[in-house]
Length: 385
Image (tube, rainbow, N blue to C red; front, top):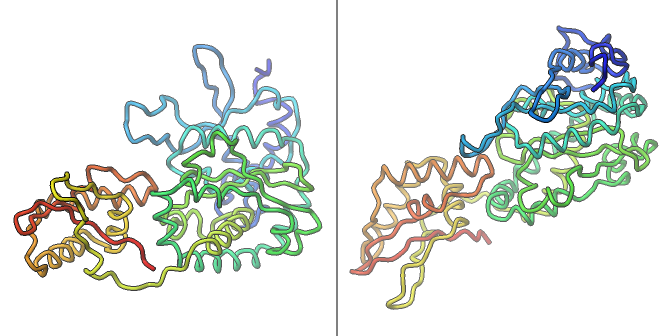
């Protein structure tokens, strides 16, 4: 650790003067964000001490998320500042934080996400970034317009994207983790072509396995092939993509809006178009089973399609029971409306967070039913072709 501490280190003193306590954190241009993020970082510095060492860090305002409380890390989320950078002046550090985007204010984190930001952010310390910042800010209006259009286009296929997040994150990871080349960026914003700006996923291959598509995106912003800054994107959940005010065009950094435009355009182009047809009871099925064999197990994909098609448990229960009553012979469902509602809500909540659907809830939303003296499984047709 720097023997004089961080307060008089060349690193901090090179940018602390840019801080302004009343400057905005959430705005579009990088220049307008810099004073606020300089103040944010300087007021969140903290010394963390473990049984092995002490180190400086920037505390994040959120908390670590884990489905079970006992497995949550004890410390609050924080981005460690390596001792090696404290002797390096970096007047552009607040610009780098401003470029990272509003995800730094996100309320819930996974440890690998925080670690990836730290590993990607600090190797760029001391690297000039002002020319790229100037061009991004000059193009802010055009980039924001493109971001809005890309988000609207993604909305037309998000039914499929949301289901892939839960049921097939590996396939989605292959799509969302591919680099964006300088040619890709220049096609979206020609003025950036002179800087040869690109984006490369900052997670290592091991961290990208299986669930990367469900995580906060951490990307290197490269200039002529060299990392110059870090840009983050929120998770691909419906709330983060379409509703969270942190990521609204008027609030988010232009750097993030550019990356999200590229990402959403790619997703829209690689995802089959799904016609916006209203759900019908004809999608319910009796799962086939051999005589004498155990009743079939419902699939998470079928349950997720059912929950996605119906906005509320009440409408889902009504559709299911009406279909069962109209069958000949009539079906008698083996779960109560209360149990169904609890399971439906559980699946909807898991889907909203892009988590795996609990198997116990699947068997309640798609329950067993008595069919002419036989106990059979109800399922839901989820292929919308």
